[in-house]
Image 1: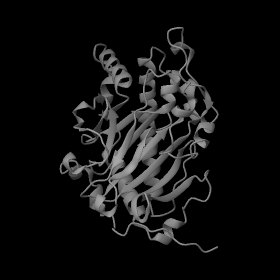
Image 2: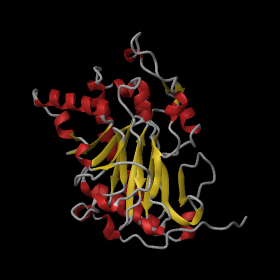
Image 3: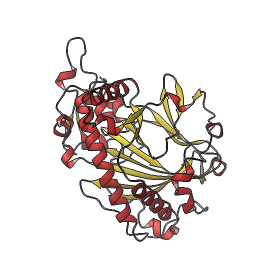
Image 4: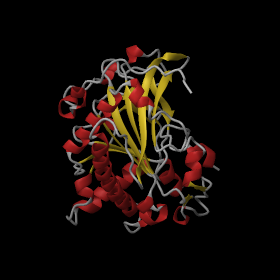
Length: 348
């Protein structure tokens, strides 16, 4: 049945935009990131940095200190830059380049992946400015990389580049889950067992945000929380992502070769609020197109996530009801990375 095709971005994404080595050196200053909401915008010096190599160091003095700092960051902030993570730059660059090339496909080619069912494993779509379905504020492609990866057939080589990136990114996040388990006072396989991570249901959203002048609002993605236990993000240029911390919005300016990580809703539930899932949003950049890959690393679909007994006592009653992970996803648009937070539904 014929239907009216949605309006897509008319400006091609230059592949040079995805060369992160130069993008970070010429990143957009936070002064060009504006918001008309009543809020305070702060620099990114409040965002902590975690050295991945230190939390897995063989040095008997360094590792305990690194784990102690990770515990502090997870409890106080819920987000951080991850450096020295071992994920090769060329793997990230190829993935970002492939994302750019996908969004430069013809409208007809991308419509093959338009949402038809909420459970589709590959979904392409558009986000429009409120009240204006001519102004695209975001174009996205969503896939389910784990437990079974399936990527788009086009462009050539894109699916392989994505799979390579997801495999390496997942290795880093699984190891980080082991470190987080240690910070909570457990054996390193605690989260793997509690959340069924061997068959964890991961969701990834690849996004392209056009410059603000193409939209009637600077909001690229409204304030939201993410599901899962950890969320990882890489991008081609700085400027756009903001975190809500202590009643103000912090601009995220990732160091070169870093991964941005934040705690997900289901780790907050499991720890009964000890580790917090932060609110964040995307503000459109005034000058350039931003491309990002955000991956929610989740429990297995059938895992019942509730506050663990170790975090509940008379002084700390349960703050959340339990729910099967798949049910919480379905209640919020299935594999939507930017849906409503399940914390609102689960909070007691």
